[in-house]
Image (cartoon, rainbow, N blue to C red; front, side, top):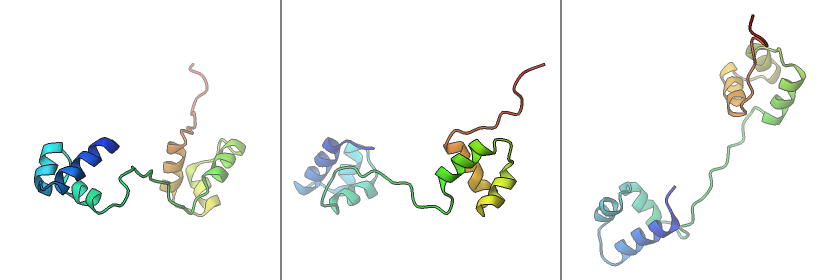
Length: 104
């Protein structure tokens, strides 16, 4: 993420007569980034929000606590989603299933 100061310097450079390509080279940003900043009214960075998904992560977290031994296939069938969706969500939530509790 680029700082607000850098964004302002790049925009000012172009507004003072510099080319967009030169601004990209001088400040080491992509040319498409320079164009994007010039078309924005506000240069403050925007935080990307997680999009709404079919799978409710809070419900999955509760399900994992209630059924710790359930397999990915069973969880996917329960929620009506693909196995990869369950795997991704559990990985992002840092919920793992320990296969052994102790070593022999």
